[in-house]
Image (tube, rainbow, N blue to C red; front, side, top):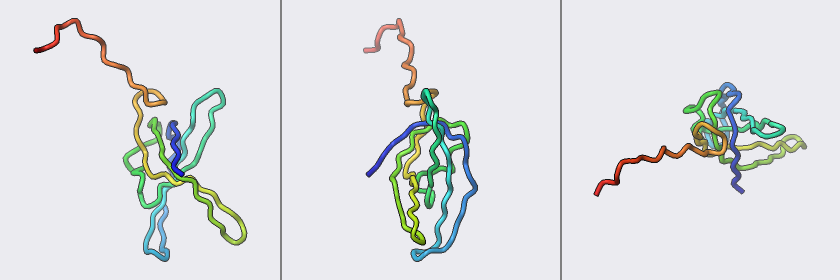
Length: 109
């Protein structure tokens, strides 16, 4: 199941790495704030730089595409939001960009 959410990057955490059954992996968490009457924050994981987090910085308005993953570890279930794409939005949340001003010049033939 793929989901999307829009917000502002408010924190980028240090990158982690390790060795697993499939070789070396990297992971970097980041947090976005979702605007609204009651703004909320959500933390995401960019695993093996699949989403391209390194191209973004704190303060960027973004749309994050992600999957929800839950894994069992020592009898507990851990749920993560794994980002697989991050897109930079124009000036406002929601991706709406201002249309160019109409021109009074005649259209070219």
